[in-house]
Amino acid sequence: MNTETSTGGGVETADVPQVDPAEATRLIHDGALLVDVREPDEFAAGHAPGAVNMPLEQLDPDALPRDRLIVTTCRTGHRGAKAAARLLAAGFGVRNLAGGMTAWANAGLPVVRADGSPGTIAGA
Image (cartoon, rainbow, N blue to C red; front, side, top):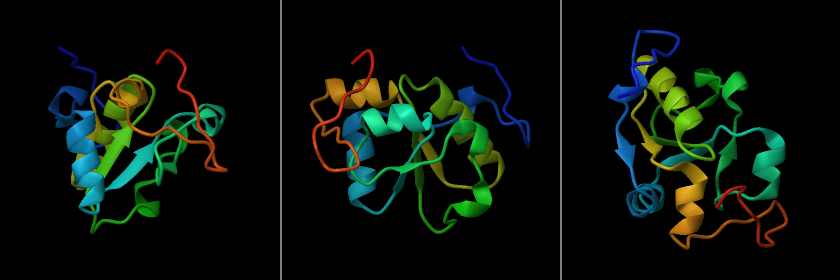
């Protein structure tokens, strides 16, 4: 069990609700915002269509809409869980994509580059 505490509010990453790729897709379809907290070069190589890139070190809750559910993601889920814990402590409705973009790609979901061409996820 991960008991690492995020900054702000003492919310632990273990407290963050997790979703699988199928549930994340459903939530996004229903209006959730997918926030990818990987570094810009990782995001540029391949990301989920419609995702917003906000690297973990630059995560700014004030820049995110409070009226939408946020789904966080990274490569494997670890950074996404940290981001989700931070957002949960700030009062957001949030879920983390378990397994991150690796799980997304392995589920056969689309991964694209900024120009819409097929992208890649390291380790997927």
